[in-house]
Amino acid sequence: MADSSVYRRRRDIFLSHLGEYAAIIPAAELVTHHADCEYPFRQNSDFWYLTGFDEPNAVALFLPHKPKGEQYVLFVLPKESAAEVWTGFRWGTKGVLDNFDVDISHPLNELPNLLPHYLKGAEGIAFRVGKHPSLEPLVLKTWSEHLQKLPRSGFAPLSMIAPCPILHDLRLRKDVFEIERMRIASEISAEGHEIVRGFARPGMNERDLQAQIEKYFLEKGTRGPAYGSIVASGDNACVLHYTANNSDIRDGELVLIDAGCSLGDYYNGDITRTFPANGKFSVEQKALYEITLKAQEAAIRCVRPGGNAENVHMTALKHLVEGLIDIGLLVGEVDSIIEQEAYSHLYMHRTGHWLGLDVHDVGAYRLGDYHMKLEPGMVLTVEPGIYISDRLAVPEGQPEIDERWKGIGIRIEDDVLVTKDSVEVLSSSAAKNVIDLEN
Image 1: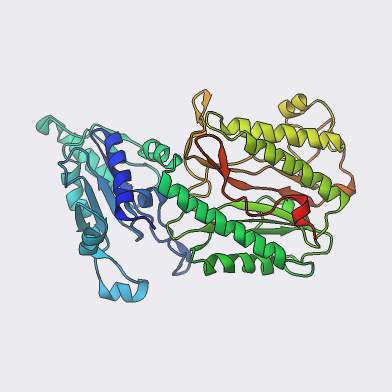
Image 2 (image 1 turned 90 degrees about the vertical axis):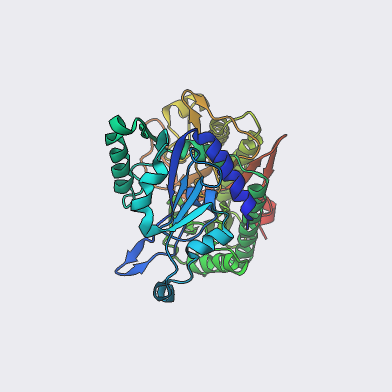
């Protein structure tokens, strides 16, 4: 876990990018699961990135227009023994002052009265409209009142911007601390995949494998799975977001597991491996697996400073299409098939995404007409796949699929760090070569 200097450095950079705008960054709120039962709390990633504070309903103000020592203000739930009996420990205002490097703290219920004071003198407001329904009316009301006083006061925050472009650009480029945390998250995730592959056998239920890998994540001291684990055997693997995880695993089927852990400070792993349940690929399974692996390895080689995620995707896509032509599941010229998307019944998603505090992490992929260039410190997944089923119609001009191919779903996903010279595959300890997957 980070010490306070990590968050202080982030806040200093954020404040320097705000100009004279006052930023309002809310924490997450508790979310009802059903009746009066709530989901386990998960902090808002932007709020966490700047504060390291893991309680709900807090509001952080970042005020570059104020003097030093008054630029970071945190409103929190107060210490309240009766509430803590039910929902657990709270830091309260004194606790955050003593432990979270806060300039000023207030009880949350004082926000309506104090927000006008803290926004006074700001050139504008940085607040994400449309995402925080309980806080937004107060922010808009306060802004409107400042604007109404403009003729008399001569100064008011005149405009509102979203803080997301600033924050998400910072979060896209991981610092040394973050990179080490992501190494750990990927390593634990990879270890879990190796353990569950050694445990799996025909006759088990998908849930048995889910329980095994998530048990390992918890044993290693993580928060548990970073997202709903996908454990998909046979044709279930052709459902991209399959999470039922309740089918029996039959002899001769492949098992696709898409799972990763989330550390205590929310850094995530995200790995997919596909392997034969009985330890031996069929001819068809092996052919498709080797195409997918070749595409993934080629795409990883494209991850380098100065490259871009679009090139990574297109490289994987070309290798997939070439391989599928070679085995007769596609016909035609590679470029024409790609242009017409005549492959999309067999491969229907992008080849990766940014990874960090969110599994599908923030950050732009394009800047207008230009693709975002890869830089050292960026982390992305590389995950091509092939999915063969009757769920999507075969495009005109492409061959009907022989029954022997149907029900095979394959995806191979690694977590890849862009380094100064090349890449580091953070999840490399999870085996993926055919010789390692067969026994």
